[in-house]
Each structure stands twice: as C-alpha cells, then as structure tokens.
Amino acid sequence: MAKMPSSMDVCVSIQHPIYCRSEDPAEASRLAQGGHKARVVMTTGRNLMKAIKVFEFGGPEVLKLQLDTLVPVPKENQVLIKVHACGINPVDTYIRSGTYKKKPSLPYTPGTDVAGVIEEVGEHVTAFKKGDRVFTLGTISGGYAEYTVASINTIFPLSDKLDFKQGAALGIPYFTAFRALFQKGSAKAGETVLVHGASGGVGIAACQLARAYGLKVWGTAGTEKGMDLVLKNGACRVFNHRKSDYLAEIKKIAGAQGVDVIIEMLANVNLANDFQLLSRGGRVMIVGSRGPIEINPRDIMGNESSIIGITLFSASKEEMHTCAMAVLAGIEAGWLKPAVGPEYPLEKAAEAHKDIIHSQGALGKMVLLTC
Image (cartoon, rainbow, N blue to C red; front, side):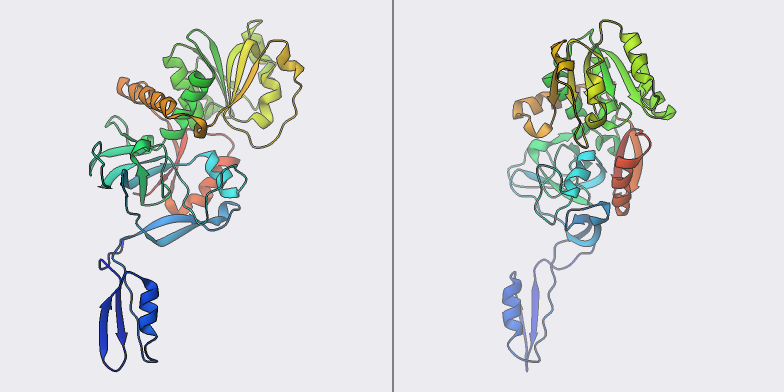
C-alpha cells in the first residue's frame, strides 16, 4: 500500500505561493481558479490497496483489478479486516452478470466470505479487537480486496484449528448447507440424504454436517478425484453423475424406500430426475440453479414430495445465529474441516469466475488469496 499525508493538501501558486488545507476537492478547484498560473497539488492520507472492481455487469472480463482503491474506514459497529483469503461462490458470478435478483450499485467489489485479521475497530465494538482472527458471512465493502469492512453481526472468531483458506470456505457454504438440511429440510438422524453435486464447497459442507448429525450420506461427483473427496468427507456411497446409468444405480440401492432428502446444486439439470428418487414425503432442497426446467407436477403428487428453494438472504437473525452456533461447535469438535480446492491470486479473479462455472468437476472450495 502507498501511504500519504492525513488530509488533502492544496498548493495554489499565483504570484506568491498560498498554502491551504482542504478536505473538499471542490474547494481545491475553486482556489486553483484564482489565476492562470495556479497549480494545485492534492494528496490524500488514506492508505491505498488492491481490489477488484465491477463497473458494469457482464462476463468475467468486467472484473477489473484496481491498484489505487482507498482502504475503507470502519464506522460504528464495524471492523476493518486485513483479508488473507476470500471464498468464491457461484452466486458471485450471477451477481456480476447482472442476472441475480439483487443487484448492487455500480461500481462494487464482489466477495462475502472473507478470512483474515482485524486491523481496526469502529466505535462501540467490544466483542472484537485488533489482531483477532475472524471469518465473515458478509462484507460491506467487498471481499475481493486486500482490506474489507464488515459489520460485527456478520463476523465470527476463526479457530486456530483452521487456516485462513479454510476460514474463507466457511461462510456461505456451511451456513447454506445447515439451513438446507435442518432449518428447511427438517433432516433427521437415520434418514438418507443425497447431495447431488457433493464435491464443491456447499456439497462438502452438507456431507460433513449430515454425517455428524446422524444421517446416511450419499453424494455424487463428476470425476474420480471428486468422488474420492466426497467419500473422505462423510459420504458412505458416491455416484458418478457423468455416467448415463447413475440414476438407475441410485434407485436400485435406495429400493422402495427411496431417498428422504436431496440437496440439489444444479436444479435446471437434475430436478425432474430427483423426483424419481424420493421417498414418500421426500424433500428436494434447491441450493443452486442456472436456468429454467420443465417438470411434471404429478411426479411429486404421488409421494407428497416437496420442493424448497434455499437462500441465506431470507434467514432471520435467530436462524443465522443457530447456523453460526452449529458451525462453531463443529469446528471445536474437530469434525468440521473445509476442503479447500483451487487457489487464485487476486489478479486472476476473472479466471476463477470462468472456472467455477465451466470446470469439469468441483474439488473443494475455490478461494482468492491476497497475502
């Protein structure tokens, strides 16, 4: 970062130099117009940082690395975090493209799942202090940056049992998985859950959580490495969803009972087939979808099945608190360990956005590294 004086300095030279200080660029401009020989020099004392900025919605190419972004200042009940790693989520790409329901004001910096160290605290912050290791479930100024500001109600202590990369894999993946399984899916010990697309960030989280809470966990993945990863993280059975007969294989093993809960990562491809796998009263929890799909309602009427969409944006404060307590307890117990996948430097954010959508198979949580 480049460091400069603490306020805007304006030097106006006419016949005799006049020096003044102003925090207002408009005032500086007015002074400069005092003569044709006027010269204005302005500096700002706030630190500068690298950050990704989006100035227009579009493809990955709209992710622009900026080298001179001002480090944000934490306000009341906020903290400034030195970012070590930031998780990349599929929803980041939907927001960037402008197709997501909620659109941020332009320009903006993407990123919600940050892990790092508190650099500064705002007024009335007592639960955290400078030097604390934390992870976030949201940011105010964006996580694809060297520094970010977050509200104290979206940050949590990061255990020494996890590194910063793992910390960046906690927020959206684990909170979403817990909400899908238990708050909306009403999953119970002894039931069978199929994680349809289990080798990515949310999928691994769902496998670990479901196994810890006593469910029988099945998962799917698209590569041998992905299948191995799913088995190592709580699944007792795994299926290759690139094989043409994998659905028949699942139906054969499930038998007449069927699958109680399906955590669905790609509903626009799989939803119609999911109905063929469900038990009576079975539930499909839609975590991800990249487009429309046509379904036959009769396929869910016979078994009185349910389809429920999942988004953390709809969770209440009480529900988010419950998610947080479950995640923190899992970390402390030692069974909750995020699997980190591909790592990218900040300047390759556009490449990461391409890969998260078009890769042949997910392998853990994708992260951006800033340190």
